[in-house]
Length: 79
Image (cartoon, rainbow, N blue to C red; front, side):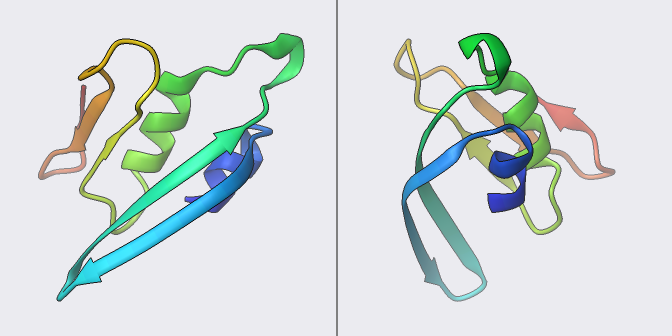
């Protein structure tokens, strides 16, 4: 996950990792943007969601409740 942010020229300001059994979650606060000051969050989210071991992701930015994505069985990406 951290590599995904680095590849997209984003800096991790703070990260929290919590687990219970075989399930864990990360809360990551990031800053920075790609060239021109614009970050393609859909691309970043797809890269994170499709990483090995990730079940789902949510980006909290803009409209509350938006930004949920999940990796389906068979490796398909769902938004």
